[in-house]
Amino acid sequence: MTRPPQVVMIDDHPLLTHALAFTLRSRGVACTVPTLTDHESLVSEVEALQPDVVLLDLDLGDLGDGSALVPDLVRLGAAVLVVSASRDTEQVGRALSRGATGYIPKERPLDELVESVLATVRGEPVMDHEHRSALIEQARASSRRRQAVQRPLESLSPREAHVLRGLMAGGSVREIAATSHVSEATVRTQVRAVLTKLGVGSQREAVALAARATWR
Image 1 (cartoon, rainbow, N blue to C red):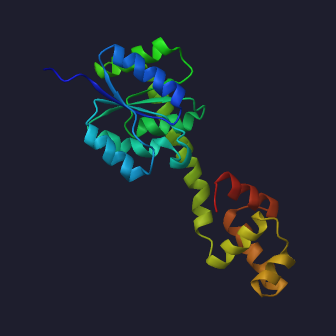
Image 2: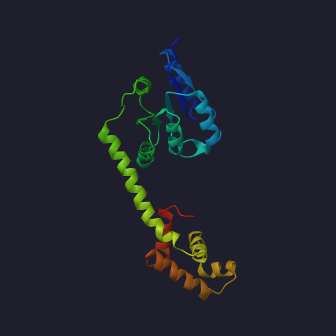
Image 3: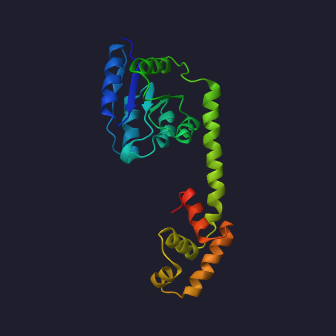
């Protein structure tokens, strides 16, 4: 007997997964919704299922960014179709750059979602090449900009990094000096070093730069 197409749905939205799984099964597609535990356990469960297609949400609650799963899922030989409500085009582009075959917004009508899944099962594209390439390039450009910001932050010494974290927490030079058990003059010297390395002119600019880089 011919093996039916196997689809795995990685999503924490039960209403959508139940509706989509029910419709796909009525079209002859075997559909499984694995337990969302941790990254390694989830990949192992998917590997045991040997799916042809994985439908992947990008916002997975405690599991975080679903795009991190894409390389492992692709390694298993599955076509990964992103079905997500995420409006973060960088996140979508990141998933595509890591090997996802396409992306379709979760809010599309159910019949359109089903047809996109069936097209992916058949090996057909669900988005045009130009749109896919543009999203990938946008994600890569954002990554390059973030890395350019992070490099000077990574050049900070442990003591300078500690001072910057204190500033980000709203601490004054006096408060940072008191909690670090050093003089205020020492902290001011470290603040000047931070500003020089980051190429900014004020503590406020240093804090803003670190926040944009999501530095901690």
